[in-house]
Length: 207
Image 1 (cartoon, rainbow, N blue to C red):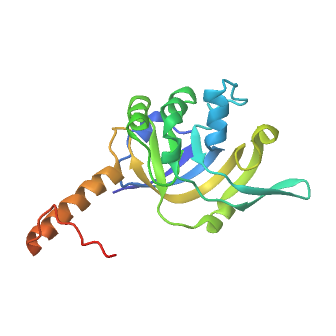
Image 2 (image 1 turned 30 degrees about the vertical axis):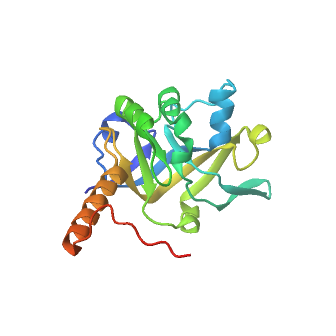
Image 3 (image 1 turned 90 degrees about the vertical axis):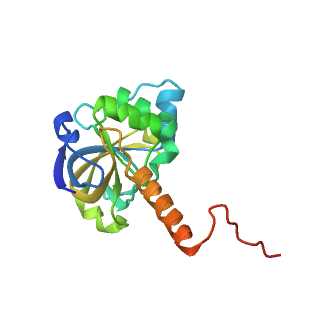
């Protein structure tokens, strides 16, 4: 496993070097997205009101941000579960030119296939440290605030050494959590075999 410190906008050649299990820290330009933004763009056919060429790093996140003395202040931040957005995952990778998606858990086969084709990865937090990350994030701007509301709006962040994250889908289509599930299933099979318990064993129901 390797450790990388990357800066957005991300380059395809550096993204294709990443392998599942690698650790990454992120700096540069990023924007946030949740379900309402993707529905607004992909299902309701609105135009994305900004260019993603210089910020091809998407964070699945609904930050808590307030306005204080005329400036935006980040109060709480934590990536949310990306699998919730699988419906739009492949479209967002292709149409927004993404190189990386940050979010908890992972994403599905369709998104992974789009990532493999485009040169994109998914990364997940290695720890739960939302308020420790606030000092690594500067709020730059916001789009679609009135249309979508504070949580669902597209926020522009400038980040500095945000992380650590683990690569859970790489640009070769490998999935860290799928591999982990296979290992767990095999360990369970071996444990049952050692204990002399058949694999179709079921616990007795208590009433």
